[in-house]
Image 1 (spheres, rainbow over the protein chains, first blue to last red):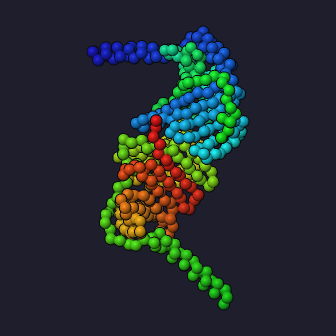
Image 2: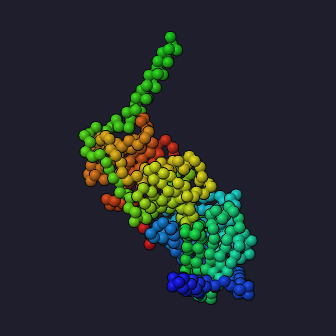
Image 3: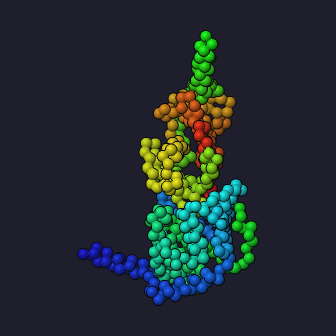
Length: 210
Length: 211
């Protein structure tokens, strides 16, 4: 009997703590949140930010941490520059992926690869935060303390094989993305934290070459 | 007459090639009395360590890079995962000396010949005990021969400090692949190169410390 009471209490408490962390938005809150993000996203012509990437694999004792800088320029130029612990740059530009791996340069044409085009669009959407109109996802919205959270579940079976879910966390005040989480399964994910964001500063075109 | 001379010549050539190849694996080594019957390799054997390496694969002129992750998950099995720099998983295996399971692989890499090659490579890389049947030496190394089914593995231990620096895998007649280790310390390799002799495949692993 006592066990049952404890179990009951535990369930109620854990239910409370869950809802305290992550609360579903109402329809009105969703509309307001989308509007705020869209207003800010529309103003973004360029964006640069520091990032730290944590690769979590359930069987490892520690996340694999890499970090660097990311640059975005309208409409679809994107450069990820890993600086630590190795130098690796990947640029998305005009249907091509340009790579500089510790000085070793290469280019891949992604013009014909649907899946890469999707991923490219998705990354740019994630960074600017403007991907709520994408019909390729089932989207749900949540409130956190000082933050908003949008969860995207791919509808496309091929994409779903690579990415089970994408979670974008937004700063409530600034309405910009502060964290991107790509879930491969329930246990394994990549979490990218964006910080020191600079919006609309001039970015030299050389950043988008390898 | 001429025909049979040519035939004779060809047979001799073939015989010569066979004989040379037969002897090729150990012909430059001097046989030596066996000083141990087994060798343990500690480079991937600690179950508490996450073995994380930046990886470059060169296969028939194509370059592929990413992150190689290995971890010993129980007494016999290693989990091996290869991801892109972005973190997307490209392949995920569980491998022991007798078992092999593919947890996941992206469709672009899902080719039997590739999976079988990597299975053999990783099994050799992660193997931590070799039984020794014969011993040789050259100027630099003590060389230990360990039979492995149709193949032989030759372990090269430097005479200077008795550390394993190279594994050579060969069939009875031909070298198949070599694994070379650059050591950080007695139990850890900071760099590993897997080089195939019969196909154009080279896998280079460089250890990196997370921040």
